[in-house]
Length: 299
Image (cartoon, rainbow, N blue to C red; front, side):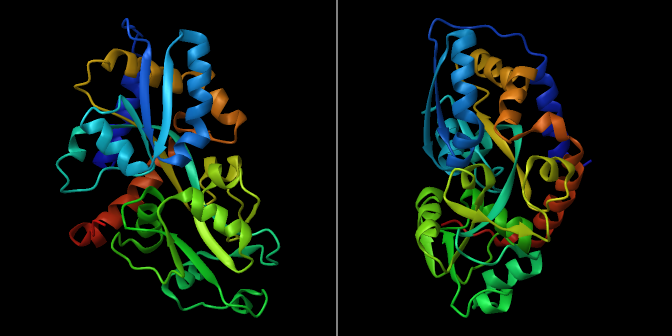
């Protein structure tokens, strides 16, 4: 098993057996990727407060903030949809606990007649080889490709590593966005737009989610691995935090049957319910790392 896959699996099992111990300060501050926030964190935080009385202040800010703010202890917990990048010393201080599986959803305007694309067509859209919807069976209109700024956003990093195996890959984007929220909103209003975002976030928008190679990113297809573009969602934390017992108690709750049921009710695949995906993803991660580890671009 790939070393990273083994370490996160071992971490999950250790934390799952941890016994909760609480301090006098019943508040934890969470920051991080909006997709993690929408897909599981808001629901888990509310349920955890009801059970344990611990307030979790949930904020956004993106995956990079969910890593770096936790590393410097300006936040207790974070959310990330990517692992830390090689060579960044600050990020190495952050621990990553996988708690859920998310899919990358390909979204278009709800009135777009296209329903399905292949993975190869997605590659060609992002490289600029396909520029008109007519090439995909749609109207004779130009494709407006919307993408995230920089290479290390959670979604941007995942697209580059999983589709291109090159985390420095440049996209032929029509417009770039600082975060997923404005990107998704732009797709809602542009009939020629296409973008990729987290499926949990996409479900909350008035957009069409395209099938990828005739597979929809639903609970069953993600859990089985039949939908090709999936990735873990992590809870990040600093092992040196003064609140480490409370932090691990919350992570234990996320892995518990109650926590996993909350995720399933919201169409999220709990990490422990689909451990077979670890081996598939570890092979993908190793291929990506071999192809691009020396070419990371920080923006």
